[in-house]
Length: 216
Image (cartoon, rainbow, N blue to C red):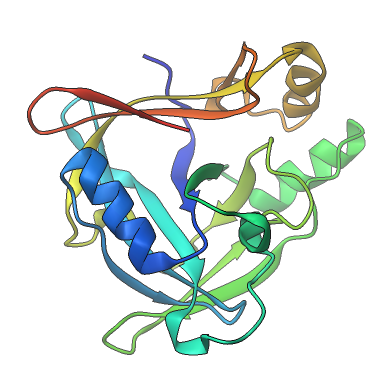
């Protein structure tokens, strides 16, 4: 089992949110619940993750263009504007001190991006606010950092769940990315980087019937 110790959530993106939710349900038997809309032009649906029988606070974020803004150009977040089908696109980690982690990484030669504010409203109208580094406009192969502050972490909400078996990053030549990720100073808090022909993320989930589903 390979699970980042500091994992916050895994991002699965697609060109259409409703189709993405259906795609995920067909493979896992779990229907993600509506999360909310972001000012970046995206909207999401959520599924909590269990690890070793324990619930959360980790979760899955299914994200796509906000249906309310149909007709607008697709958002660039997580490379959604270039997607033709669902894809495991990114993951985030929650270091103890997001600002110190960014500063230390820069000192080691890697800039994970500025820490910025983001928010979304729940279907009930509640405003959720958090801080994070870049989310796909730059690079997707390293984790982005997140700090929820006083906002409840979504993985602890009343949402359906599925068991996380593993999350790894696959690279034909792992060493350069290992060196880059090491600059974040997260140790086993970040995803393991393994060798393989197809670059990208490999996410393994266990269905309620015990079958393990692999998503890329």
